[in-house]
Amino acid sequence: MDNVVTELTAQLAQLSAQLKLLNAQKQPQPAHKASPWLPLREAAGLLHFKSPRALKARILRGGFPPDCYRQLPSPSGKRHSYLVNVERYLKTLR
Image (cartoon, rainbow, N blue to C red; front, side, top):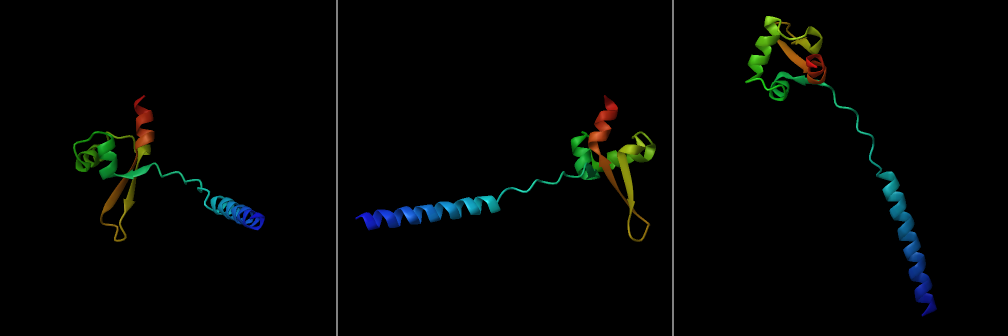
């Protein structure tokens, strides 16, 4: 009977050590901060524009702060995509 208890205690200690090691290895890595630059589709929804096209029109008319958006050319250089920094834009409204 003492042998069984001793053996179970040893197994329990071993399992406990393995569990601690496993938990230490699976510590969540700090999530890198997501970029504040969002594509027009996401930014338009967050800023309550009717559509991404309406937001793009506001940018092209000059009614949007130039430091709150980026214009990225396509590889051919004929088209552009836009990224909007929603956080920065909201700070300009305050």
